Image 1 (tube, one colour):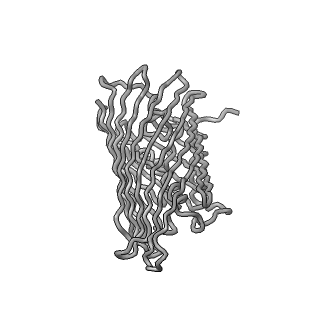
Image 2: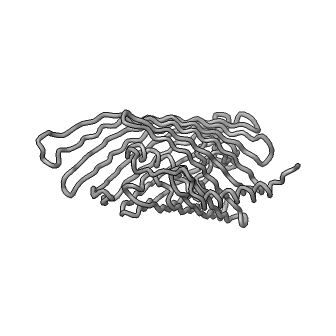
Image 3: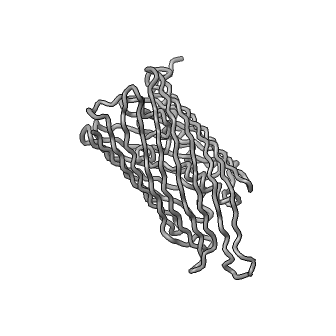
Length: 347
C-alpha cells in the first residue's frame, strides 16, 4: 500500500496532539534527583536558535545551519558572494519563582567550499539574583565558546564535528551570607551525520559526550566552627539523538527527534528520555509559522510556537516562545517560560 506524504504529515500531527495531551503513566518527579545533574540535563534541552525553539526543539534531521546536528550547515550550498552569515540571538528564560536567565549568543558561519563549513560561536548567560523555593538566593554566570565544522561528502550525505567549552559560576546565598559557590568548566564533543534515503526525507544522528569538572565550597554560614568544606567532582554526560524529517513542500517540514541522555557523577546518576516533534510551515514565501511539543518521560509536555520573517535574501528574523521546556528545574525554580529572538544577516 502506498502512503502519501500528506497522510504521514497528518499522522505525525496526531501523534503531537496525543503526546501533549497524555502524561506518561510511569512519570516520576525530578525532586529526588541531584541538582547538578538536573541542571546539566536542562541545559541540554536549550535551543539558542528561534526557528528550532519554535518547532519544539526538533532538529536532528534539519537541513538548516541552526540544527543541533553539526552536519547540517553543509547541507545547503551558499549562494552569496562571500559565503558568510552572522546570527546574533537573545533568549530570556523566566521561571515562576522569580529567577530570570538572559542568554546572548553570536554564531558566524563561513562556507569554505571544498574545505567545508566552519561555524564558531560564543554565548554569555547571566541570571538575576532571586529566591528559590528552598529559601536560598540563586545566581548564575556562564561564558561559552564553540567551534564546528561540517562537509557534504555526497548528494545524500553530510558529516560534522563540534566542540564547545564553557566556564560558569553558581552561587547560593541566604541574605548577606554565602551558602555555597561552585566554579565549573565543561567540555563537550559532538559528532553528527545527515543522510537522505529518498527524496523529501532526511535522517540525522547526533552523539554527544561531555564532562564538567567542578569545585564547590560549602561555607560555614551557621558559624558551627567546623569551617568551610570544599568538594571536587566531575559530571559526565552522554547524549544520543536520532531524528527524521519530511519536507512536504518547499522549505516546509515536519521534524521528529528522540533523545536519550545519561548524566552521572560520584554521587548519583540521571537518565532521561525525550521526544521532540515540530512543524515548520511556510504560509507565503517570506513568512513561516512553527509549532511543536517536547515530551519527557518524567514530566508534562512542553509546548512551543514561533514565527519566521524573511523580507529579503540577506535578512531573516525568527521569534519563538516555549512553555515548560525545562521541567528539570521545577523543584527549585517552578515552571518556565522563555522567548527567543534570532537575526540572520548574510554577506
